[in-house]
Amino acid sequence: MTKRSTLLKVVSIIMIIFSAIALIIGIVGALGASMLGTALSEVGVETAAAVSGALTGIVVFGIVLAVIELVCGILGVASKNKKLLTILGCVLIILAVVSLIMNIVAGSFSAMSLVSLILPILYFLGARQCVE
Image (cartoon, rainbow, N blue to C red; front, side, top):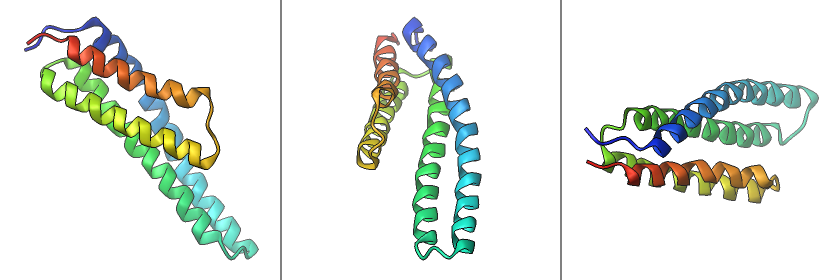
């Protein structure tokens, strides 16, 4: 059992809330992507499959990221293993950077894109504050 970090607990709760919202939005987005692909193919757009496939891939990445953040948030609130929490913090930072790069490439970069990188960094710092 590790001594809990207040920063880790607060960030974990925020991550749980945001990842639950992101999961709901991702599921709705997946349904929208499939509907868009169907609509484009009915209209006769030749690239309907490619557009639908790319959009579905991005939405699936978002859903996977939301699930990982949800699990990390739950484990962060429990604060059982400092080493595991630190590794999960590193994984979250890497995934946030990948997501940031995808936003830049897609041309949808904004200040909120940078904010999505702050929580994983704070999670990592909170995990480092735990004492075994």
